[in-house]
Length: 262
Image (cartoon, rainbow, N blue to C red; front, side, top):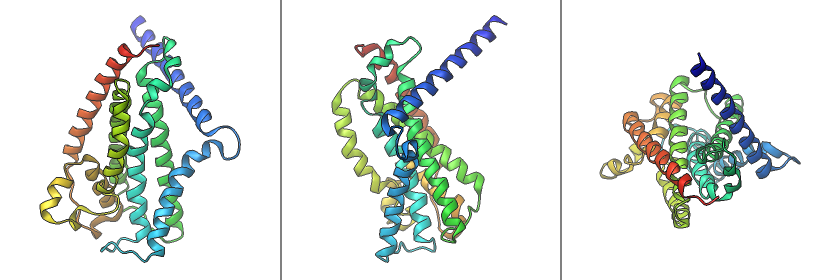
């Protein structure tokens, strides 16, 4: 009985810690004036809308029956989630050293807070844009809502695991953060946001599918658009990659806590 009470008490404390860190991060980053925390949704929405507008205005086509706006929303919303989560977590430990004085605040709390904010913003942006464009006829409702949800959860897992890994690794050397920035730009066009794997030459498809987030985007688009396009994915492979990244990130964040000078 005491063990159960102790566990509930620890869970309650951890929940309050995460909530406090979340509120602190949101207020510090977005402030209390003007749109405030609404910028959390507005930032990814502006980017996705900008891409969709440019593509539409330029008359670009992607060789499928998927409307260009729907293609941009399903691609760029997902890639912003994992890229921003990892980028915001870089150097997060050094920037929040003072908080680690508190016994109940751990390195993993800081990293999870950063990634949760970015994942929440990208998710909210994706929902708002999907509902808006569906209501005006620029997108159609998802063919399989459960598959869309599953794909989004997998992409969120990938973003969280990558954020843990990058955030913890930057505590060992600032070089990691400097290397991650160009790597993120290089991964962006390879992430599946702007193409379908089936459009690529067959000799390149196997290399593109080595990137776990490509599987998530393919799975997401199949859930959204059905058999309009041919998709290539292996969610088992993506799950294994996410698990490996998660375990590596958890190990590094534990070691980072031991090394950080408070």
